[in-house]
Image (cartoon, rainbow, N blue to C red; front, side):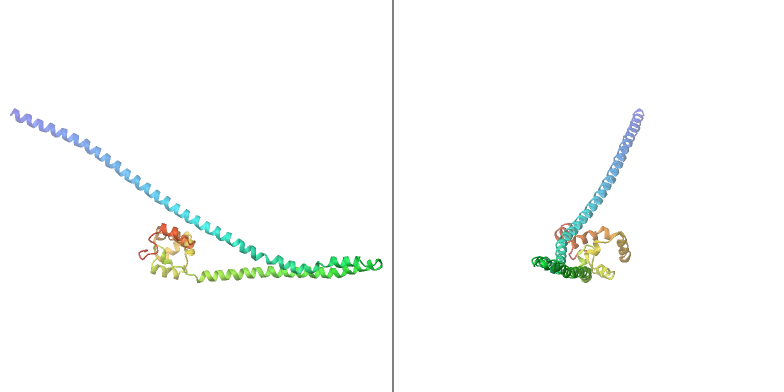
Length: 251
C-alpha cells in the first residue's frame, strides 16, 4: 500500500513538472513565432519599398533619355536655322548695292572747272537722292517680302511634319502587354505611335484604361517607359530592360 502511494505521488509530481516545463516552452515558442511573423512583414515592406524605388529610378532614366533626345534634336536644328537665315542679308546687300556709285559722281563733279563746280555737286546730289530713296524702298520691300515668306515657309514645313507624323504608324505590339486585340483598340482610339504613348498623362492613362477595361495594367507593365525608349530609338537599352518584348509571348 505504501509503495502504491509513493508511485502515485511520483506520477503526480512528474505530471506537474512536465506540465510546467511544457507551458514555458509553449510560451517561448509562441514568442518566437510572433517574432518570425514581424520579421516577415518587415521583409515584405522592405521589398515593396525597393520595388517602388526601382520603378521610380526607371522612370527617371526614361525621362533623362527623353530630355537627352530633345536636347540632341534642338542642337541638330540650330545649324539648319542658321543656314535658313543667311540669304536674307545677301538679298538686302544686293538691292542696296546701286547706291554706292554716288561718291564717284560727286568726285567727278569736283574735278570739273571752277565755274561749273558749284552747279554739278548740287545736280549730283539731287540725282543721287532719288536713287538712294529708291534703293532704300527696294531694300524695305525685299525685307518685307522675306519676312512674309518666312512664316509661310515655316507653316509649310510644319504642315509637312504634321502630315508625316499622322501617316506614321508604329508596331505597338512590340510593347509588353499589347497584343493584336489591344493594338486594334488603340488604333480605334487614335493611338498609333510610340511617341503618343510616351506622352500620356495620368488623365490619359485613366481614359485608356476605362475604354480597355484595365485596372492599373498600363503602370504595371510599364507601357510609357517602353514607349519612351522605342520613340527615342534606344533599341539596346530597350532590349536590356525588356528582354521578352517583341516576341510572340509579349502578352
